Every structure is written in structure tokens, then in C-alpha cells.
Image (cartoon, rainbow, N blue to C red; front, side, top):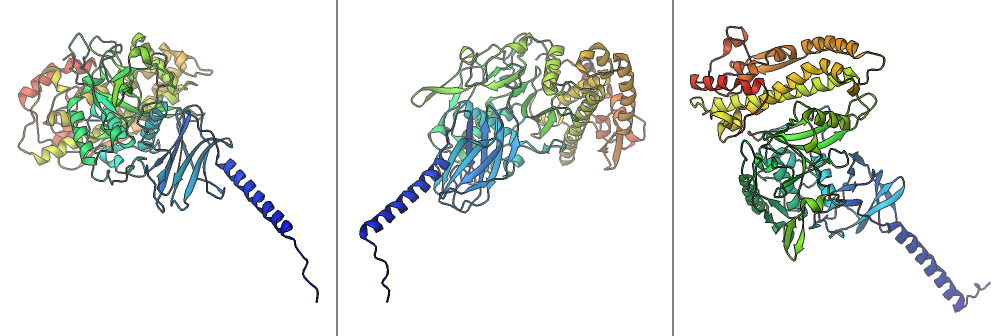
Length: 597
């Protein structure tokens, strides 16, 4: 019988060493796969903050310097899995993905740009190795706030977003990246119904609560006819940093917040550093989603998305606002929604929340204008907007939205669509007033006097529409004046081989066609529908000067002429004393100027 070959112990020892060396080399390769240098310019965030085995994990990679092209995972064995990735914005640029079920003991999430790893983030079954409760406002957390806002309201551009309040979108895990972020089921019954001025503060406070950041707000007056609002020292809420407040505790704080802030909080002078917000330059790199716009008359919007211009589609800048009835809508930013004026009693324009930085242990302070001027950590302070006339302001902003310019028909279509959007939003506002009257059939809603019709409390604030109707009147004027604008400012348009006069005449013909064929429908007092063309809406411009009173029937609120078939179903009229006051206030609407308080 043949004996098996003899193997010495030294040979076996060498084989063991070879095997160990091979295993070490594999480990080194895997370690190399796991290694990438994170930079401040790109950060990865996961939700919930403490992921659990078997549950889904949402991922958001955010860069302030260039797009993130791909997200992937690497497990302990070095296996790579590309994730289905959605992309948004820029700047900041966002890549969004989801792991449906966390199934390994450790997962490395990698963000790549053109095949090169630019940021990493480790997740274990017991939680994230990079704590998402960052506790410091810096460029990374500001970019996260911006990306969160964009995703929250980022439905497709051709769909309308009209919500009864902020609650539905915050309770939607598909939209809200921070839904149940704390793992407390904290969003299911969270009561958040901010109105106009409260909306940006509520969004900021909600984000700070989830991520663990301090927030500040000030008590402000409303200013006067000759001076803008002034504010007191800031109240700084740092409890979110020290621990994780319960939903009940956050609700209590949010109520304190909305009781304190109002439209004057955002209308402070641009140079006033005793303020919650500070002005920015009109620069695409600085106007991130989350930026606040304060108009000179008290309305407030929050930017949510820049839609880039393409060869066959105009660009858009989208914003959300809240109304006194707590409804929240998304709309295009244009001259009809973004009022700008050179006035002594307000500091209008685009603004950012003034950052908080550590002052000492457990103490915080807000940054001054000087500290923010030229800042690279935060959006820099700028007085540029104070130097612009309204016409220059809107021309500059139009250039940011459509840097390649628009041909006249594109410009008309964009303006027309924005006007239709405002009319559609008004249908909801008027319907809300009708619903209130049906529930309180014997109540006559008290009408304030003078400038208070634009800012007051109670059912009048909730269901009257003087501010919205003034913006609608301005929007009508902008659309009607567009043909003339072509001849006055031909440099704003791509005329190709047309003369300005030829382009003007073509747009006048197009205007007649478009306004005559497009219709909206409202519900009359007897429940029957009534259709109006946009041409009829435009012809009723003067009727909208006194159509804001919820004590009037819905037919009057849509400008129906007395004695017409449309008007025949009207059964309710505002008291004579209120009608008299509305006639006295007509010039404000005709001239599109709100009176000083």
C-alpha cells in the first residue's frame, strides 16, 4: 500500500501563515473599501436617528459644492450594493435613497461623485455611529435644513400643493424625511397649524427639535407709518440640545413661539441686527430652499425649490406660504406673489434666520451683521436689496430664474400660469369662508376699520381676503402689462428676428386667445357650479377691490354683476356700514398700496 506523502510541521506552519496572510490582505482590501474621507462640504444623514434591524432607513446625502451622483452600501464582507437614488436641487445638492430593511450588523453608506467616494456614514443595528443630533448650527446643518424643506414640499412641478394646514405634510413619511426621526411616534398627532408669519418659525423649530439644535425668537412690535418693527432681546431655547423633548413639550414650546411672533418679526429693517432674520444678496448660491421672503405689507413666504430652465421649459422658483385659515399652498414666485417696495416702515426682501453659535458652556448667542458679512460658514449678510428699485429687483430675480432669458410666448405662458394658480388658490380661500358661514348662519363677522382689515384676529383674519385680493389685482396688472413690457424692456426677452413691436402685437393676440379659452369654476350659494373664463376674471378687476368680505355671498366675492343670472342665487350681503367702509378703502386696492398701520 502506498503511504500518503509525508508533510512536516514546518510545511503545515507555512501553509497556515500563507492562509493568515491571504485573510489579512482580504481584510485590508475590505478596510480600504470602507475608508473614505468625509468633508464638511458633503454630509450623510439617516432617518430615524437610531436605525433598527429589520426596519427601513432613509438616507440623504447633501453637498454644498457639487451634485452627489450615487449612493451605495458596503457590508462587512466588502460587498457593494448601489441604491436607487433620487436627486434634488443645487445648491445645496441632495441625493436621497432608502434601505427597505436593515439586515446586516454593520452597513457603510457611501456617497459618490462620478465614481469617487466623497462621504461615508456607518450604521449598526444599535444605531448610527455618526450621531445626527449635531447640536451646532453650521454650514452642514443649514444645508440639511434646506434639503429637508425642499423634499418636504417637493411634489412634481406640474401638480398643485394645497393643504388644509402644515400637519398633513409633516405626517407623511414619504415627504417628511424627519418623520418619526426620534423613534417616539412623535408625528402622528402633533398639532401644528401655523398661519402666515408663523410658518417659517414653526418649520425652523420643528427641524431644531428633531436634530437637536437651539432656536431663538424675539418679541417685536409692528412698527409705525414711518419706522419698521423693532424687537427686544432674543429668547433662546436650548432644551433641544440638552435632551430630546417629548412631543408634548415641543407642542408647548411651539405654542409659545406662535404667540410671540407675527408679521412684524420678519419686516425688521435690513440693517437691524436686533432681529431674527438678516438680508441676503440676490444670488442663486445664497438663496437656498428655506430662505424667508418678507414683503413690505406683512406677507411671508418660504422658498422651497429652484426648477432650472431648460431648452423647452422656463425655470421656476417655488415657495410656500400659510394663510390666516392655516392653509398651506405652494406657488410660483413672480411679481404677482412677491411684492417689493421701497418703504420707510419695513425691511422687505429675502432673509435667512440669524444663526446661533456657542458662547460658553450651555450658553448661546446670535451672530451680528459684522460676523455674517463675508461669511463662508453661513449665508453672508448683504444690503444689496436695499439698493434696488422694485423694477430692478424683479428684473434681477427674473434673471436668476431664467438666466437664458425667455421668448415672449414663454414669458407670457409662465405669467399666465402663475395668475391661474392664484385664482385657483382663491377658490379654496373663499370656500373656507363659505364653510364657516354655513356653520354659523346667524353670525355677522365683525369687520375692523382702516389698515386693520389686513391684520387682525378672529374670523375676519381667517376668512376675509383683502391681502390675497390685493395680490390678485397686482397679478392681473402684471399679466395685462406684459405686451407693453416687451417694448419697454426688450432686453429681457429673446426676440430673435422679431422687432419689439411685432412681438408685442403677437402677444396681445395670444393673450386674447388664452384668456378666452381657459376657465375656472366656483360653487354658487345654491350649490350649483359657475364657470368663468380668465378674460372675465380680468374684466372684474375693479370688482375685486371690494370682494374680500366673507359676509357677502360667494357670487359677490367673485364679482358677479347685480341682476345677472350668475348673481340670482346670492342670498347674503354684508351690512351697509361694512359696505360703506369697503368703498372708502377702494383706492388702496385700485392703487395696490397698503396703508401704514
